[in-house]
Image (cartoon, rainbow, N blue to C red; front, side, top):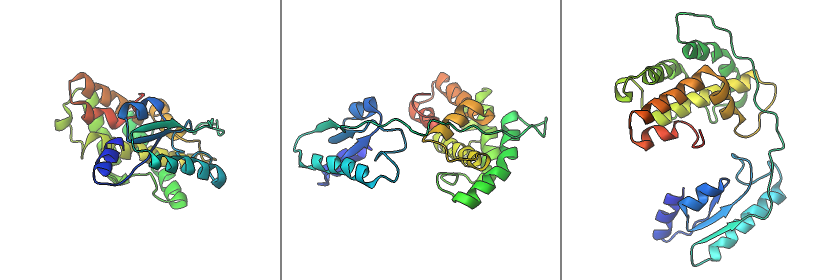
Length: 226
């Protein structure tokens, strides 16, 4: 986003970049940056609190008056009040002949379909692959984790984007298994920490890194702190 901000500024369009990770917004140095100490996924702070959100926007818009690069902090911090993470039972193994992650994906499909019916396809699959293609995509990442070069493994697209679709599938399936809407980013943490699919994605990412692949190819397969 900071790179795009510089491009827009050169074209005569003023920008303000909001960020929740201080080091990231400082290191990318947008022309006008506002750091907000909020939970990830909540760039304007409190959901449903229009007064609070308007204060954030007013501070952000005030930076448009700056004629030189500027970085400021929003004066209020927020902790994630919904401290309960995403905890839901994963389906039992049904096919011992399949890799555990592939068997898991297949077992999660009913929960995924329930959640899509209830919540829609927001943040699910479809950037590169559909839900019907998740099994094959995850199988390709299994091959990468086991040593196959990623270009020979059959990954159906840019690895980072395919990994995002796999993660989206799991997060939506998690909604179908859970009895509450989880706090920001807890679905991602559940996927990476508790599921066989998450382990495969992280292992494939590490294998690509260790094989000397260019960082943009593998880095964005998971959040940067992983």
